[in-house]
Length: 194
Image (cartoon, rainbow, N blue to C red; front, side, top):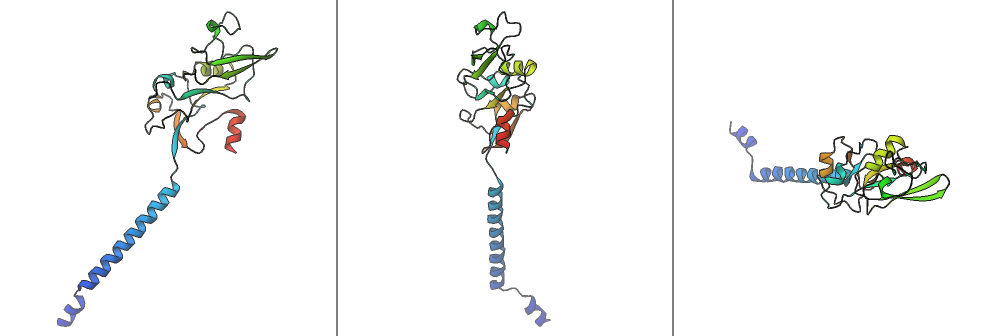
């Protein structure tokens, strides 16, 4: 029996060796896990999916900034350059001129320039755009959808919890990689996806 007791007896050196080996294994595993997690993580930012957006006008009022970081974007490759632009002119407008009473945009952010009969070019003055989406809704209703809303990342604070995303009834906001932060339409979208 005395021989069995001496074989089962654990000495201080064995306990220390076992403890150090366990600690080293946990440390190596923890560092490896952190490296794998960091290599797989990407910085993400908020963006509007123009194919899901319903132009509810919440982008203009629910941003934490004094003026919304959401702006109208124009896909020139999709635009028809029409005289009767449903994103520019108020439905039932008395005339097709640039008078404020005929414009759909409440701030006059869409600029119309005559090119040649019957074509006009439409540009967005982002400083005037409040992100209400009225022009986008008009363009999508009767046009080809060349106007759409996007979060402009040079203006956005990149809040972790976007207040517009929380209030978006169509869940059009989603997180996208910061290295490709825009969901574009038309040829612009095709160029960025390739």
